[in-house]
Amino acid sequence: MNTEIIKEKLEQALALDECIVKGENGTFQVIAVSAMFADMSRVKKQQAIYDPLTEEIASNAIHALSIKALTPDEWQKQKHFI
Image (cartoon, rainbow, N blue to C red):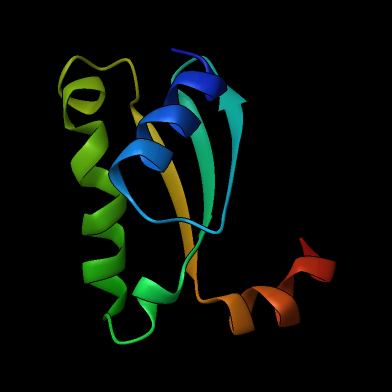
């Protein structure tokens, strides 16, 4: 599993302003930015990111996934620290 495939799947499934995927060997970090996250709980944000990647997680192509799901305003405040 490579980062470009994960990024493509997320961008196709979700209306993201920005999507950054890093990692290798089944361990990945995702930063997803979208206004859709504004009224979601942390759990709902994570579920939104997991849903398009269900097959990869089930097949163990992705076995560890760190998620930051941010609104554009949150991203503007945090992107300098990431």
